[in-house]
Length: 122
Picture 1 (cartoon, rainbow, N blue to C red):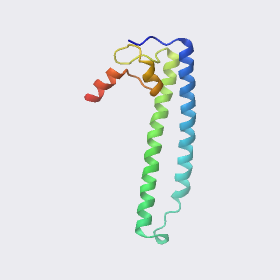
Picture 2: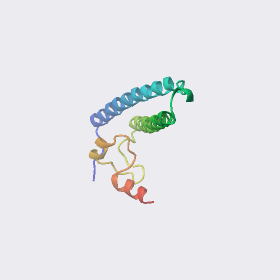
Picture 3: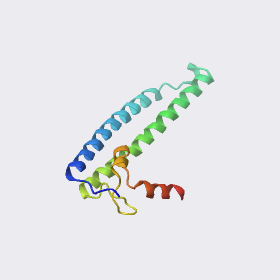
C-alpha cells in the first residue's frame, strides 16, 4: 500500500505538473499558429488532388494533437487544484494513496492502478 505524500513531495509533484503544463501550452500555441497560418493557403487551383489530400490529413493530425494536448492540460489543471485541496495523490475511487511510481509516470492521474484497470474493463 502506498503512503500519503509529504509536503515536500507534494511541492515536487506540483512543480512537475507546472513544468509539463508550460511545455504543453507552448506546443499547443505552436500547433495553433502553424494551423491558422496554413488555413488561408487552401486553394484548389494551386495544387493537385494528392497535394490537397495530404494537406487535409496534416490538418486533421494537427487538430487531433491539439485536442489531445488540450485534454492533458485540463487534467493537469485539475491535478494542480487537487494539490491545493489536499486530494492530490489520493485515488478518487478507493480513496487510498496512489503509488508514487504511478504519480511519477502520470502525475495528473486520479486513480490508482487497480481502480484504473477496473474502470477500463467496463
